[in-house]
Image 1 (cartoon, rainbow, N blue to C red):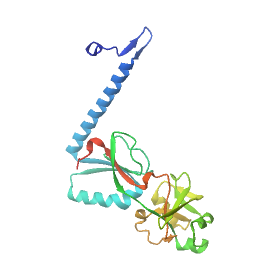
Image 2: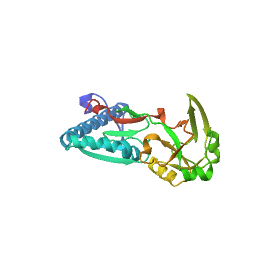
Image 3: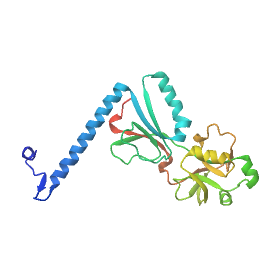
Image 4: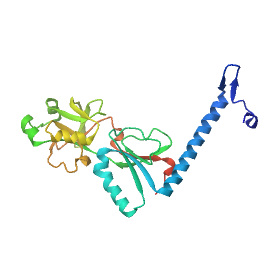
Length: 238
């Protein structure tokens, strides 16, 4: 190989052999080529078997994705879906995913994305909890309540928006969850006021909205947008 390339790819001694700078460059290029070949094989196999691998956080899958996949399955009975539910909506895509649904844009340059939804958030509690603890009239009233949020809201800063005017407050959280479904379940137990996305509410119609004139956001979720992340080589593939 070195004769063919007319380059020394390794430094050799009586005790060791190590790659040269040109050797490292060649090894990296070969690794990328092997990865592309493996991906090509996977694409061909999937086109033959019509298998689609999807990873999604559980609440989005239950409330939105499953109804979409149901319609696709009825129209395309030969398609097989492998659906992995991940509780953390910010986790990185796995190398074999065809579609990964998450909040953050991909950091890996071999992936691209489409915007799927722009969720908005509100505060919800049971009537039982509000009777016991009182109904907040202003965002700062939440400081005397048991507030429930997400584990990825590390800063504890909630931004309240009303009539296009925003104000941020540091809200102490009594409990934090990685799953919207678990968060809703805790709120339904009358354990506090929960920060909930409207799309995740679904059949949870017994909850009362708190501070209904406000929408609530937090800085940890980039752009507040749910992204569909997929490999660039699948771009344009129906």
